[in-house]
Image (cartoon, rainbow, N blue to C red; front, side):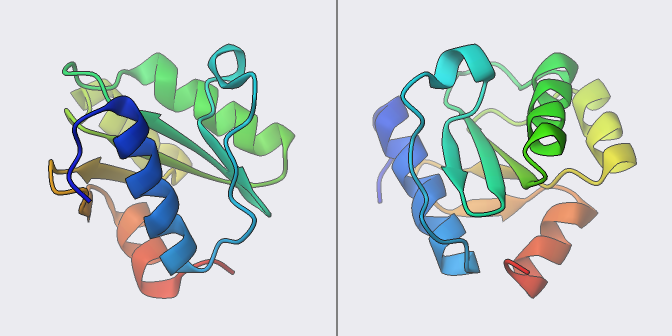
Length: 121
């Protein structure tokens, strides 16, 4: 799926998460206030389609959303992540993926590698 819009990026992430074994993936109606673009059974995910690397605050907010929902948190970005965001994600074991313009997610950290190899549990 070629990514041309933010909606394409969210759709690519949802397709990948479904492939990993997450089910019932939906877009919450009020996603901007919570910072969550996708929810599913045991899952919260954020997709950052901007041209700036995702920052520390975005990673921590998603992690907190996952904690409050007792769910796995997964982050997708088109532009990558700041060094601070990557470091914090490593500390809290939050999977980070980069979406290329063909819609293919690439794991960025060990937590993403583990999720890719193990799928939804």
